[in-house]
Image (cartoon, rainbow, N blue to C red; front, side, top):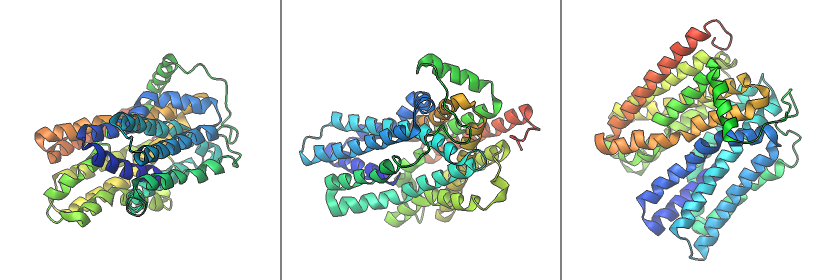
Length: 391
């Protein structure tokens, strides 16, 4: 994940320097999340059918190819807009490809009892990558330049690729997670997965929780952070901007460490997942309306903490309740909802912000997310009020 974010830092700089195109910069965000939306269930089906080690390696190898291609095009002076667009799409596909396989891999390694811890630790490591990726990317950009910085970045993927040749876990053979024969990878099969989930209120609620928070807010406010920094007294300048930019990731990393010792969340349950979703929405509203630098930092830190908490819980619940023979597909659906629907947050926060202002657009988007998450609480409570999954 650090390599992923390093590539963003350097390639976004390349795009700005070479093309000065806001449209291409916007396409970079869309292309990153659209493959999750379009292919989430399909890539989950691949994880159901094939060795997850090889799928993860394929995704990592595609990341390497993209990094090296950026470097080669820059070194030869042949980089054009269509090259950039194609590489941005391939980068997004690589991220979407390996995500469901990695979740099945965790289940194979740790089993049911420790799955939540594995998911949470993985989310913590992802946020560490987000936290340190920009710093490492900036250092590579300054010391090696964009082309050789991207070459060095491509090498960061190799240890994981090599390790996956040695591990015995395939995503299917341990803890009863046996691979079974699957139907063809088709739209009809994807539609069947969505129909099956619609009849399971707990999974449906977790998918809806991930989807609503991603569609309405996601991480779109990060792209607007320069303007938030300029409009919040005390946040102006590089230091204030950097603090705001990293506060959410710092909160998420803190959550990953703290929740490992907090016995209240040792058992996956729906109520705390939705409860933290409600609290997350309130934190985003607080950030949107405040003009205090201290309150803004605290709200973003809390939002990062709560986001990791409810997303890790939701991911775990979905895996545990999914049918064993379709676990990859259901995880892919969750990934589609959690990641793919972030494409919409560019409109709810960004485009709407151009009309009413970013504070208002973020505040109203978070308020709608708050209403939906509260509604999900009532939805599940009425259908599973006495089950262990709810408590």
